[in-house]
Image (cartoon, rainbow, N blue to C red; front, side, top):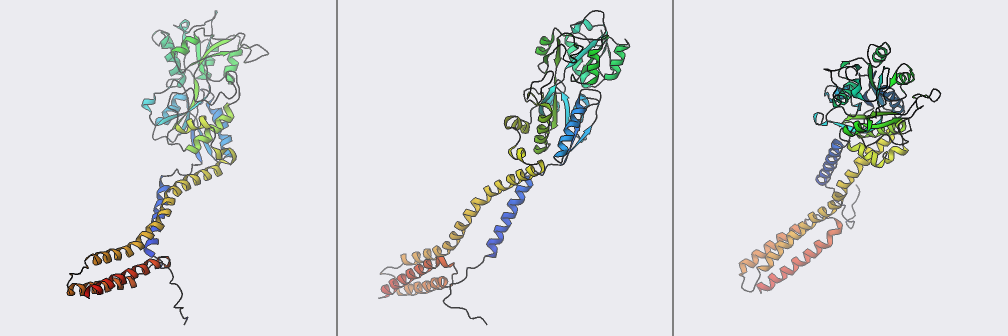
Length: 436
């Protein structure tokens, strides 16, 4: 059997209760932070585009290609256009999370859970017509056969609002609901007199119609006035020859009005996906175009729905630091790690600093409690104290001394015990002196 060295210092006593409490606290704190911290971003995002209205689908597929490189699958869902995209986003049963919507559609008060990610590009309104003389004002289309787009479509809603401001409605003008291709065919076949399309100048159908000598593109001389009356519209100028330099199409500068295509999202889309989507949009939309200046888009200057907080931060500071230098998946891991560790350390460091003080207070409190008893006993000793009381004081002093002898404290607190025992001897000497 191993012999213990009686002169060896006592080993510190391990407190299972204290460390058990501390372990539970750490586990609880970590669980709470993990519970309320942002979860890892999903690897899938659903976007609603448009078939036959605007250039939404081609842009969405470009997003899809770039986002796939970062490990995120962009699920592209076709729709009839901007209005259906908005309806899908508002529908709580729909799994659509992001969609293209041009300005002028929807009411933010009716969709409090939707936010804007900013404007992506100009989306002009193109008015084509057949006539012997030029038409430069919308009022001149009154009474004609006007294809304004399918019922419930975004084009129709926007164009009808502008026509109404000119006193044109279905009571004085025949408004038809032909889609893009059908409207163009009807115009060429002289079944309608005027058609309205919304899209970018590089779309094949628009290019064909601008170059068609039998069809004219309306040069809106009231474009500036209309843009002032409808704040979400812009007055744009299509330079002559911008569509085709060789044929000088169009043959003159054309005044157009245009909303901007915006990305609308549900407000619960993960912030990391918002940043990735805007980073992708920046790579696609930042180049100059017929109407756009370099780096003009994406933009936070033109939106109808409230701009999301994540989009505000993106437009203010750009892509988050880690996403600039690391792959998306690794950047999100690093960002989540920082998000978890910093709050954890903010909570645990003060506690770690407090634990030694609590331990010190708990140990010293045992010693100070005996000092309190000793002081109380000393205060009752005086020359007139009876012998019986003094004998009782000695017994109480012996009990205090016994408790001190049995007190277990770490080695660094031993001097306090010896000091206390010295004071016990001092009080005992006073009692003996009082006994005479």
